[in-house]
Image (cartoon, rainbow, N blue to C red; front, side):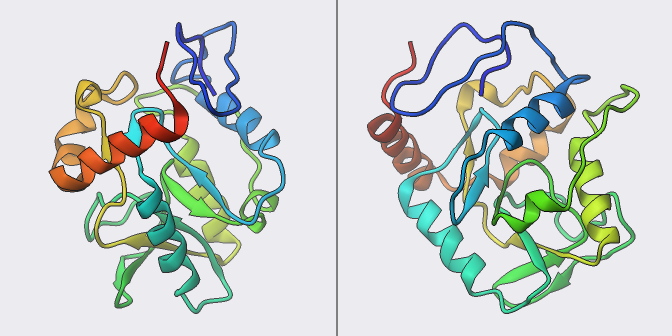
Length: 198
Protein backbone atom coordinates (compact mmCIF):
# COMPACT_ATOMS: atom_id res chain seq x y z
CA UNK A 1 0.00 0.00 0.00
CA UNK A 2 1.52 3.31 -1.10
CA UNK A 3 1.24 6.59 0.80
CA UNK A 4 0.92 9.00 -2.14
CA UNK A 5 3.96 7.54 -3.93
CA UNK A 6 4.95 8.08 -7.55
CA UNK A 7 5.47 4.44 -8.51
CA UNK A 8 3.53 1.18 -8.71
CA UNK A 9 4.62 -2.41 -8.10
CA UNK A 10 3.56 -5.01 -10.63
CA UNK A 11 2.76 -8.61 -9.77
CA UNK A 12 0.73 -7.90 -6.65
CA UNK A 13 -2.32 -5.98 -5.47
CA UNK A 14 -1.14 -2.40 -5.09
CA UNK A 15 -3.14 0.43 -3.53
CA UNK A 16 -2.00 4.04 -3.41
CA UNK A 17 -3.42 6.93 -1.41
CA UNK A 18 -4.04 10.23 -3.16
CA UNK A 19 -3.01 12.09 0.01
CA UNK A 20 0.26 11.69 1.91
CA UNK A 21 -0.49 10.74 5.55
CA UNK A 22 3.11 10.55 6.73
CA UNK A 23 4.16 9.72 10.28
CA UNK A 24 1.25 11.46 12.01
CA UNK A 25 -1.29 9.56 9.91
CA UNK A 26 0.53 6.23 9.82
CA UNK A 27 -1.99 4.75 12.25
CA UNK A 28 -4.71 5.40 9.66
CA UNK A 29 -2.64 3.89 6.84
CA UNK A 30 -2.06 0.72 8.88
CA UNK A 31 -5.71 0.54 9.96
CA UNK A 32 -6.77 0.66 6.30
CA UNK A 33 -4.18 -1.92 5.32
CA UNK A 34 -5.37 -4.32 8.02
CA UNK A 35 -8.99 -3.81 6.92
CA UNK A 36 -8.28 -4.98 3.35
CA UNK A 37 -6.09 -7.94 4.31
CA UNK A 38 -8.35 -10.67 2.91
CA UNK A 39 -8.50 -14.18 4.34
CA UNK A 40 -5.24 -16.16 4.62
CA UNK A 41 -3.51 -18.60 6.94
CA UNK A 42 -0.56 -16.30 7.56
CA UNK A 43 -0.03 -12.55 7.30
CA UNK A 44 3.25 -10.70 7.00
CA UNK A 45 3.70 -7.00 7.68
CA UNK A 46 6.78 -5.38 6.11
CA UNK A 47 7.84 -1.74 5.81
CA UNK A 48 8.20 -0.72 2.17
CA UNK A 49 11.99 -0.42 2.43
CA UNK A 50 12.48 -3.95 3.81
CA UNK A 51 13.23 -6.92 1.57
CA UNK A 52 12.51 -10.61 2.09
CA UNK A 53 12.92 -13.57 -0.25
CA UNK A 54 10.86 -16.73 -0.64
CA UNK A 55 13.23 -18.92 1.38
CA UNK A 56 13.07 -16.49 4.29
CA UNK A 57 9.27 -16.48 4.19
CA UNK A 58 9.33 -20.27 4.48
CA UNK A 59 11.86 -20.02 7.34
CA UNK A 60 9.65 -17.49 9.15
CA UNK A 61 6.63 -19.81 8.94
CA UNK A 62 8.70 -22.76 10.16
CA UNK A 63 9.95 -20.76 13.15
CA UNK A 64 6.41 -19.58 13.91
CA UNK A 65 4.94 -23.08 13.76
CA UNK A 66 7.74 -24.34 16.00
CA UNK A 67 6.72 -22.04 18.86
CA UNK A 68 4.65 -24.21 21.20
CA UNK A 69 2.65 -21.52 22.96
CA UNK A 70 -1.15 -21.11 22.69
CA UNK A 71 -0.75 -17.43 23.64
CA UNK A 72 1.69 -16.56 20.85
CA UNK A 73 0.37 -13.65 18.81
CA UNK A 74 3.13 -12.62 16.38
CA UNK A 75 6.76 -13.12 15.39
CA UNK A 76 9.01 -10.09 14.90
CA UNK A 77 11.10 -10.81 11.77
CA UNK A 78 13.71 -8.17 12.46
CA UNK A 79 16.45 -8.45 15.08
CA UNK A 80 16.77 -5.07 16.76
CA UNK A 81 16.51 -3.69 20.32
CA UNK A 82 18.49 -6.76 21.36
CA UNK A 83 17.80 -7.65 25.00
CA UNK A 84 15.83 -4.46 25.67
CA UNK A 85 12.34 -3.66 26.89
CA UNK A 86 10.14 -1.61 24.62
CA UNK A 87 6.68 -0.14 25.36
CA UNK A 88 5.90 -2.70 28.09
CA UNK A 89 7.57 -3.85 31.32
CA UNK A 90 8.52 -7.27 29.93
CA UNK A 91 12.22 -8.10 29.69
CA UNK A 92 13.19 -10.40 26.77
CA UNK A 93 13.63 -14.09 27.61
CA UNK A 94 15.70 -16.61 25.65
CA UNK A 95 13.42 -19.41 24.45
CA UNK A 96 15.95 -21.37 22.44
CA UNK A 97 15.30 -20.70 18.76
CA UNK A 98 13.59 -17.36 19.47
CA UNK A 99 13.35 -14.54 22.00
CA UNK A 100 10.12 -13.89 23.86
CA UNK A 101 9.68 -10.13 24.09
CA UNK A 102 7.05 -7.68 25.27
CA UNK A 103 6.67 -5.76 22.03
CA UNK A 104 6.37 -5.89 18.27
CA UNK A 105 7.15 -3.24 15.68
CA UNK A 106 5.87 -3.11 12.10
CA UNK A 107 7.76 -6.10 10.69
CA UNK A 108 6.13 -9.36 11.72
CA UNK A 109 4.35 -12.61 10.91
CA UNK A 110 0.97 -13.41 12.45
CA UNK A 111 -2.34 -15.19 11.97
CA UNK A 112 -5.94 -13.95 11.92
CA UNK A 113 -6.28 -13.79 15.72
CA UNK A 114 -3.80 -10.89 15.79
CA UNK A 115 -6.24 -8.51 14.07
CA UNK A 116 -9.21 -9.36 16.26
CA UNK A 117 -7.53 -7.96 19.37
CA UNK A 118 -6.27 -4.54 18.28
CA UNK A 119 -8.02 -1.19 17.84
CA UNK A 120 -5.80 1.48 16.34
CA UNK A 121 -6.51 5.06 17.35
CA UNK A 122 -5.18 8.46 16.42
CA UNK A 123 -2.46 9.77 18.71
CA UNK A 124 -0.86 13.13 19.41
CA UNK A 125 2.11 13.37 17.07
CA UNK A 126 5.61 13.33 18.53
CA UNK A 127 8.81 11.68 17.31
CA UNK A 128 7.17 8.36 16.39
CA UNK A 129 4.04 7.10 14.67
CA UNK A 130 2.89 5.34 17.85
CA UNK A 131 1.50 2.34 15.96
CA UNK A 132 3.94 -0.27 17.24
CA UNK A 133 3.46 1.02 20.78
CA UNK A 134 -0.34 0.83 20.52
CA UNK A 135 -0.30 -2.70 19.17
CA UNK A 136 2.27 -3.91 21.70
CA UNK A 137 0.47 -2.46 24.73
CA UNK A 138 -2.99 -3.61 23.68
CA UNK A 139 -1.91 -7.19 23.03
CA UNK A 140 0.37 -7.34 26.08
CA UNK A 141 -2.47 -6.18 28.34
CA UNK A 142 -4.62 -8.99 26.98
CA UNK A 143 -1.99 -11.56 27.98
CA UNK A 144 -0.58 -12.44 24.56
CA UNK A 145 3.06 -13.34 23.95
CA UNK A 146 5.39 -11.77 21.39
CA UNK A 147 8.36 -13.53 19.83
CA UNK A 148 11.39 -12.35 17.90
CA UNK A 149 13.84 -14.11 15.59
CA UNK A 150 17.46 -14.36 16.66
CA UNK A 151 18.73 -13.63 13.16
CA UNK A 152 16.97 -11.07 10.97
CA UNK A 153 14.94 -12.53 8.11
CA UNK A 154 14.70 -9.17 6.37
CA UNK A 155 17.10 -6.60 4.97
CA UNK A 156 16.84 -2.90 4.22
CA UNK A 157 17.37 -1.65 0.69
CA UNK A 158 20.67 0.22 0.48
CA UNK A 159 19.03 3.42 -0.74
CA UNK A 160 16.73 3.46 2.30
CA UNK A 161 19.25 3.30 5.16
CA UNK A 162 18.18 6.87 5.91
CA UNK A 163 14.51 6.42 6.85
CA UNK A 164 11.95 9.00 5.87
CA UNK A 165 9.97 8.33 9.08
CA UNK A 166 12.69 7.55 11.64
CA UNK A 167 16.03 8.80 10.33
CA UNK A 168 17.71 8.46 13.75
CA UNK A 169 17.19 4.68 13.97
CA UNK A 170 19.10 3.53 10.91
CA UNK A 171 22.44 2.73 12.58
CA UNK A 172 20.76 -0.04 14.57
CA UNK A 173 18.92 -1.28 11.48
CA UNK A 174 22.12 -1.54 9.46
CA UNK A 175 23.81 -3.62 12.15
CA UNK A 176 21.06 -6.22 12.34
CA UNK A 177 20.12 -6.67 8.67
CA UNK A 178 20.69 -10.08 7.11
CA UNK A 179 24.14 -10.82 5.72
CA UNK A 180 25.14 -9.68 2.19
CA UNK A 181 24.62 -13.06 0.49
CA UNK A 182 21.07 -13.27 1.82
CA UNK A 183 20.47 -9.66 0.81
CA UNK A 184 21.38 -10.44 -2.82
CA UNK A 185 19.07 -13.46 -2.87
CA UNK A 186 16.37 -11.30 -1.30
CA UNK A 187 16.55 -8.66 -4.01
CA UNK A 188 16.81 -11.19 -6.86
CA UNK A 189 13.75 -13.01 -5.51
CA UNK A 190 11.75 -9.81 -5.08
CA UNK A 191 12.43 -8.73 -8.67
CA UNK A 192 11.39 -12.16 -9.90
CA UNK A 193 8.18 -12.37 -7.85
CA UNK A 194 6.97 -8.78 -7.87
CA UNK A 195 8.30 -7.45 -11.16
CA UNK A 196 10.03 -4.13 -11.61
CA UNK A 197 9.05 -0.80 -10.07
CA UNK A 198 7.99 1.80 -12.59
